[in-house]
Image (cartoon, rainbow, N blue to C red; front, side):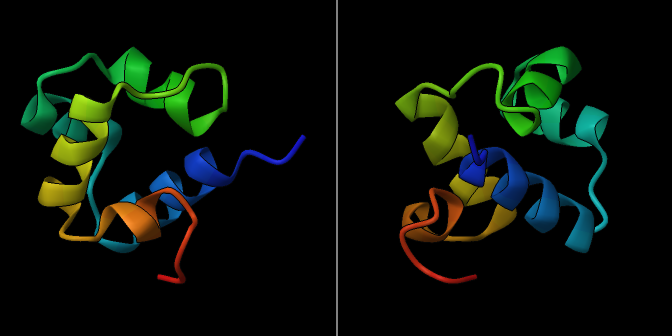
Amino acid sequence: MENNFGNILKAIRTEKGIGQVELAKAINVSKGLISLWENGLREPKMTNLVALSKYLNVSLEVLTGMSDY
């Protein structure tokens, strides 16, 4: 099964030069949770999606794969 959200999150994060630890601190979650999201083992809550969207400066549509980045 394809992990669109995790792949998109990792691609955007790495393109912007942001590490998992930095992103985790910025949105107040653990680095392990970022890893779980990127590997498709967990899905973020809506509040985390909004925080990711704001911090990474991308729309929710882009982050969730409903629109191209």
